[in-house]
Image 1 (cartoon, rainbow, N blue to C red):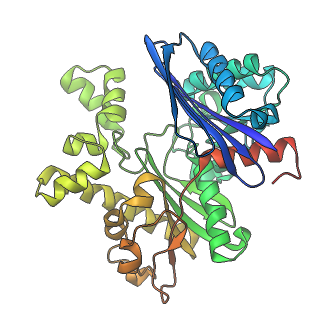
Image 2 (cartoon, rainbow, N blue to C red):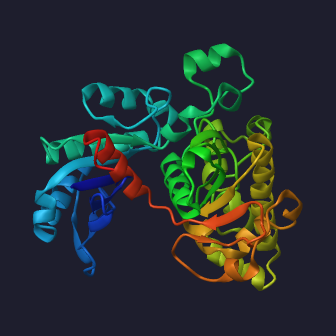
Length: 398
């Protein structure tokens, strides 16, 4: 069973073709700079080298046709046997608590949620419409970043605002990175040899965007991102938690519009705002050379992670494992070490040798005597989308 996964950005389309249930990638690629003069398409089948095509691509619709042509040429029978297409959609609000087969009603509802994700949902919709036109007759599924967190209780998702703002405008915590949190939770359960339904986990998705989740018995009960992806942990360019009055104060004191302040907090803050750079590798290198800004930025970054770990330990009562994932979580041993420093009294005992050892597979990095296990689990959101798509369309596929 072959499933194509599409992740559409404002000027890009990422895609992977999977064989299920093996999870083997059959083809993958990236089309970027759509509508920006000369576009670039990188495509490869299997383990072959990437093939590069440069040409003018004026829209997502034209780009999808180019991708389909490329897949037919390079993936051949594997693409001819396409059984379904899964789309990453950032925001499903309260309307979608699980994957859904796409039809006109679903498209309309996703469009209604554009105000909640104005930078993402329009691009996701462009990808959906382009794929429907390019692959008529192939069933297509929307998989939502917010869906995994739809299980949160009201004490976790409600803000302390008048109820009318929740009822009329949907002001509440939704959470994001849900596909990643679900995937690594399932892989952690497999690694531990225990049913996910009996585990309590804290999962830490640390990339350019960062979020934490508290998972009880396979269900998300709290997460750090809020109504938007701005809340929570310090990120590459996002501030994470700040006093909400800062928006008004900065506007009054500097003359910045609220739109300007929003851009400041989303695009110019976080690690970039503190140290002038957002790439973790650059920051670790700068700190090693004695850069004070990088040192402070990384201290704040790890301090915030530690605060959320402590909060989620209190919420869950008992934690079986802490799971690090995504680019920083999987590769930055120093960040893992500093985020867990001095937590031995809470049952978290890191094994220094295991933590520092490089690896790209699921592994345990805590000591054998640690009551709370610490894991590194590589995430694969595209594979999780493919599996959820197949599960919805063909219930026996997973």
